[in-house]
Amino acid sequence: MQKYIVIILILMFTACSEQSNQVDHGKLSVLVSVMPQKYFVEKIAGDLVEITVLIPPGASPTAYEISPSDMRRISEADVWFTIGLQRETTWISDFSSLNEELLIVSTIEGVQRLPVGRYGIPGVQASHEHSDLDPHVWLSPELVGLQAMTVCEALSGIDQENTTVYSTNLDLFLREVSDLQNEIHELLDPFAGEGFMVFHPAWGYFADEFNLIQVPIEISGSEPSPEELARLIDYGRSSSVKVVFVSPQFSEASAKTIAGELNAGVIFIDPLAVNWSENLSRVAGQLATAME
Image (cartoon, rainbow, N blue to C red; front, side):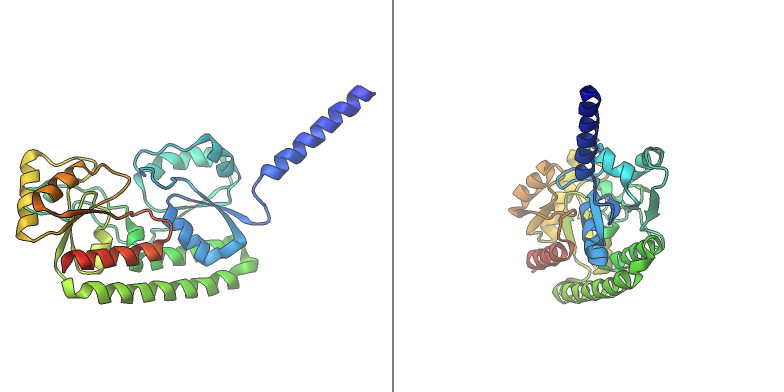
């Protein structure tokens, strides 16, 4: 009899322990692919959701593998907001098999995506045929507004009791986005039509919105050839480039080579920074300073 009591107590303790480690199921469990999406969802949902970011800060979105510690959260999640990363396509079937009730919502419905190779200078790889669609839609405030509306609609459909909360928060966030747009236009409008040099072509939609030209050093992970490197250096000299921008997720070797030839600085700008609004404001200020 005592043996059975011990077994029951062990089972009760194990169950309590597992329950204490689970996500609070009084809240919606939300998956997002990259860190800026966490910012958007938090702005709309506040503390009504628990958010898991699949690709952590500092990791490359093109190669990151889901960690075992995230698998349980995926299996328990209510909704996953995708953003058009190529990496997501390999996860969709896996996540659906793991969690048959997972709602997968694309936040890029209604967003016109453009080829990643649409920018470049003659004779450099960026001017080659690169038909892959540019995934960096979170770096344009205008496109983020569209994504935010999709997030709000999806959350309201899942959690109808809090529709008013989501709608009110969406209005506040869209106002924040509008204020940010005005701030960036004030900083960058004097430089309309000018180019800036960046190692990884993450800032194309940002450049589109604010009438700038992104000049990438690499595309699709390919470093420039010696001939292309020479042309980039010539472009930098003719355009009086003072700064070459790099991202912490990628190698900066070629960027440093070009910067050295131009006697220019190297500045890190992170397309995956946690505080999206603050980050874009800071990047706009750095671009304005670099182009003066």
